[in-house]
View 1 (cartoon, rainbow, N blue to C red):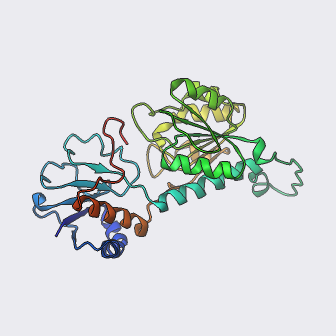
View 2 (cartoon, rainbow, N blue to C red):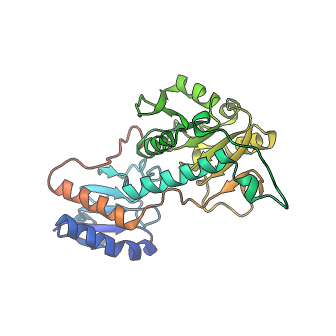
Length: 310
C-alpha cells in the first residue's frame, strides 16, 4: 500500500483530507495518507506545498515523486536535494478560475466599467467602447492557462495576440515566439495579460524598456507571477501615463505589505492572489491520478522539466 506524506501548512490538511480520501477511492487505490514524516525512507509520494515543513528531500530515498499542490514550482524546482520526479498542479479548477478572472478583468477594462463604479455624483458619460473585435489583447505565455485564456478571449471576438518562448499554435490567436516576437505583440497591445512562469528568463521581464513599447494608456493584467514585473518601472509608467491601469493579483511579497504604493495608487487594482486558486476537490483527483499512473508504470502527468523550470 503506497504511503503518502501530505506536507503542507496545517490548515490545508483540514481542507484536503476528505477530498483526497474520495479521490483515491474513486481511482480504486488503497493508500495511507499521513501528515507525520516518521520514517522518511518509507514514504512513497510527497504531496507538497511551500511552508509545509520540508526543505530537505534527501531522506526520502524511497519517494517515487513529489506532487505539488501549486501550479508554480519556482520555490522548490531549484532545490538541490530534490532529485525525485516533480509534478506541478494542473487541473480544471485552476484553469476555470484563471479564465474567469482574466476574461472578467479584460471585459471590465474594455468596457470602461470603472468610470461608472467610481464616479462621484452624476456621471452621464456617453463614451461608447469599441467592439471586442476592434480591441487587441496580448497574452504573454501560452501554456495550459495562457492557452485557455487566449481561446476564451478569442471566443469573445477580441483580437488576440499570443507570445511564448517557443513556437505555439492556438486556434483564433496570432501567435509569436522568441526574443524577436515580444516587441511586436507589446507594441499592438491595448490590454496585456501576463501568464508566464517564473524562470531566470522571465524574472523582471516587464521592465521600463518593455513598458515603453506599449501604446499610450495600455492596461496591464498580472495574474501570473509577481516576479515578472519591475514594480518600480510599473509605478513610473503609471505616473507618466504610459500605463492606463494595472490590475495585479500576484506580487513579489505576499501578502502585499500595507505600505506598498500599489494600495494607494488610483490606477492600480489589487486582488489577493485569487485568480487561480487550487480547489481541493479537483486537485485531489489530479494527485490520485498521478499516484495511480506511477503505480501502474505509466508516465506521470505534468512532470516538471528541470532545465526549463516548469
